[in-house]
Length: 313
Length: 298
Image (cartoon, rainbow over all chains, first blue to last red):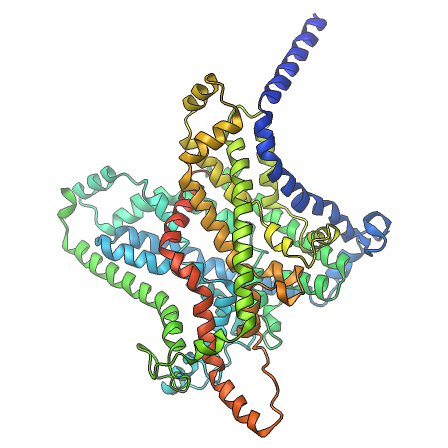
């Protein structure tokens, strides 16, 4: 009996190997991508261990002294800790609360737009800022909101207001960050909902019209439910990124005057690591951030699955 | 058609809806429009806030001055090179891998997919990658700006879904009967049918390379390697210092220069965004297509 089972297992294995051998050309096609990911994504994972060491480049990973949780403790006891977490969450939650519903509303509006020409023109216009580079976006903010020569302040002054130091004021920074982000991405983010809306069947709308449903009712009871799965997935993805504020933009918008609200965990990681060359500490802070993100993502994913929605995995 | 039977409430809705949409469009378009008109207006008039709807005191001095700046030209040339070489590499590697992953007869497909997707959710972070790049001797080379970002897993998934849904299995079977190998099938049959996804990937990776600044910031310190975005950052955000005035003749020059500083900034924004904006009508279509493909199976 057993020998038969073993034999069958052996044969299955051999069959699988033969099949794998038959697609060796496919593995060849995969090789560059697999190698790239291995070198630039997996090999750095091995480097995470320096978060638990006192890393020195001369001694290498394994030669550097093991210090356990010391780097993490240093971060948890740091006076900056709460300010960093608060700033990071303020920016991300503010972005989420304002930036998440707006594209949904906009796409529902666009979908109802009766004039095809107007719709196309509006779409073309609102997608455009997405293609502007981060440096140019922040450059535009700096030039247009400049306290001395910015057009916004000039207009404010004409209207009888005082000039406002927009780019160098900690209390204004979150608003500048969030609303410039909305300007850049609100249009672009409608695309995915728009794609989902295209699957709403016309029959459903026609039937509802016969039953005397108004446009508002049809949007609420036909369009919105149809794109609900898309909305859920987008929400999961965004919540999983709550501790990942758009680093490149914050970094560019940051200056000594707004540091009180613009220093986030990621800019801190950058400063500690690349400006102060405190590699181990920076890696520890980065790892902490990464783990929190992963926990957030899996929690939200689990909750939506429990609620019967479609999760990510 | 039933849809033509509109109630009064629906007609009001339409009017309000279209008005709001046009208004939103105008608000979003205005900053871009303003930058363009400000770049060709008299800087004094701009600073007085009189340039609102049309350019005033038209001048091309800003452009003249910025075209004299060698660093901008060098940045431009560098960026063109990085974008061209980088995009070519990215698209090639991604398409090959995506095609292989789209084949259901690939043994270990699920595991390989997990291998890629895992990296979307967890990474070593800034410093471990920095050390890795350093250890490989890529620091301060042009290579690093071309190689980094070769495989975006998001793009890989989009391309894979495309191949899965457009290349019929029967076609592969027929080709195999005729003695076609996997690579031959990919190159001679699948690729020519996949121009749309090649365009999507080219646009995604291309715009990414064009707008990229952070890799250059941390991995290069040689000025001659700087891409355009780093030069822009110096001009727009760090307000790069012009030479200090020493003699009296130069003071006048300095005042003149300050007068044009803002003008040059507007000009630089326009010039640097020009290639993307020219490509925009074309690119936008493919960008949207990419999102749609991604939405099918995200």
